[in-house]
Amino acid sequence: MDADNASEFPAILDICFGTDRQSKIAYRFRDGVPPCDRFCLVAHAFGELIGGIQYWPCRVNGVDARLLGPIAVLPAWRGRGAARALVNQSLDMVAEAGVDLVVLIGDAALYRQYGFIPASAQGLFIADENPERVQIRPLTPAGAAASGEVAVAGKVPA
Ligand SMILES: CC(C)(COP(=O)(O)OP(=O)(O)OC[C@H]1O[C@@H](n2cnc3c(N)ncnc32)[C@H](O)[C@@H]1OP(=O)(O)O)[C@@H](O)C(=O)NCCC(=O)NCCS
Image 1 (tube, rainbow, N blue to C red):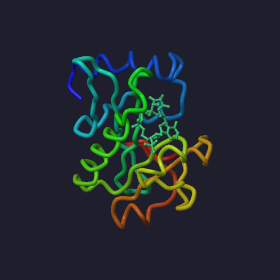
Image 2: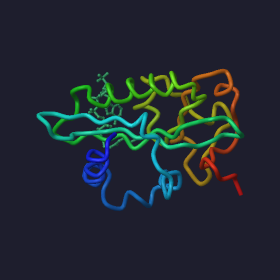
Image 3: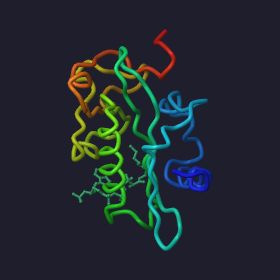
Image 4: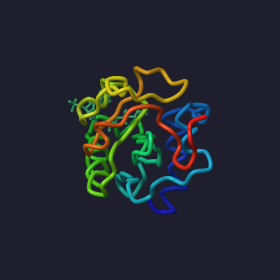
């Protein structure tokens, strides 16, 4: 995601998630932390930004992970496969980079199709978050063996 798209993306997030979105627990992983730009992608239609996906650094007991999210597509452009393309392309890039694990906070029903499983099945959790909303996609044996609290990269769980 280049600088122009990065400056436009928050307006899309306001439309898709509301202006109070920064109170969500996921923002703990984003406050004061730059996104992993090389994995963040955008979707355009007729030259206009219509959606995007971001990733943020995190760790699970020393295992290298990324928090996927937000992903958003403007209402007028939904149902045409934009989100599927954003998720699949970016996950391929994250896997190719050797990252062990992808974590997200979202509906299991939406993310199952991309190979995500409930984090609780592997003993992973995000403090204060509803366990049913935390999903993971292990990408390496280390990712498949990781368990414990998902922590902001660079900070250790209290
Ligand atoms: C969720 C969102 C990104 C999907 O974007 P989209 O471009 O319409 O998605 P796609 O067209 O690529 O759909 C891909 C598949 O996901 C399914 N899907 C889309 N939204 C879904 C949802 N909320 N729950 C379950 N499945 C969903 C679609 O049915 C489609 O599957 P199908 O082809 O088998 O029918 C979009 O609705 C959005 O921005 N919503 C508001 C923000 C949001 O909720 N983001 C996710 C936070 S966890």
